[in-house]
Image 1 (cartoon, rainbow, N blue to C red):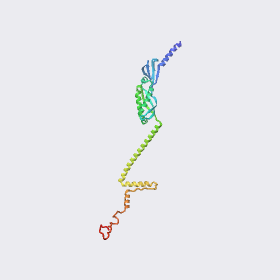
Image 2 (cartoon, rainbow, N blue to C red):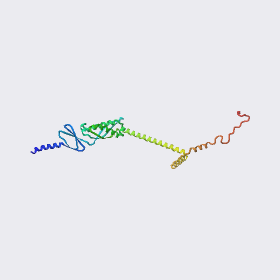
Image 3 (cartoon, one colour):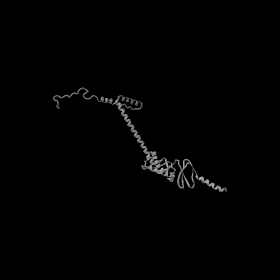
Image 4 (cartoon, one colour):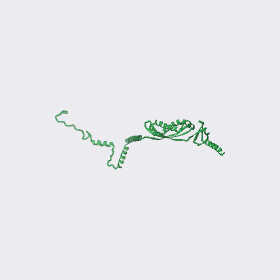
Length: 274
């Protein structure tokens, strides 16, 4: 008698256990009635009818997906290996179950193809220096494509751009050449500014002889502070011209009075040769 009551009770308890589902806040249940979509239920207590209703649970939290390394040929024909990380979440549980078979796998494949497609349109320098812009472009493309699956892409980050050794050496040489070019440009600009200041100083000194004399005195003071065996003393050009005129001596007709004519031999007329 007891066994006859025990079997139905156990069956009823098993039926109730199979009918009750408790979903946390971050999950939703997509319920199908005889294979047809009925409703999205949760969170909390959800009751379904076994063998008649079926429920698939979807996690609404952000999923972190590591995109595998991809061989990418850049616009300037450089082969690099690039990997990235993708952050996305389900915003529509119904579409994520009905519109695509495995939304995680589909999103991963979409991220890989988009990564190769977008990076292949840019040069190597842009891959290395404009990652933020590339991240935004990849995110926008994946988000627009996965929207029909009920998926929202939160962020895409390029993690590594790996190059071979020969390309690394070429980039190093390019960077060194760029630094040398900047150093030469800065040096040339400094020489140009210095020459302009020297011209201004020369103009000021040419207008005021006292400034030139003070410059001479400052030069002599600087030279006296050095232990040098040779001293170069600057002299004004006016003094040098005075010395030159004194070394030439008096000119013709000025020294020894007037010049006398040669005496004429007797017996000869003027202009007649002897």
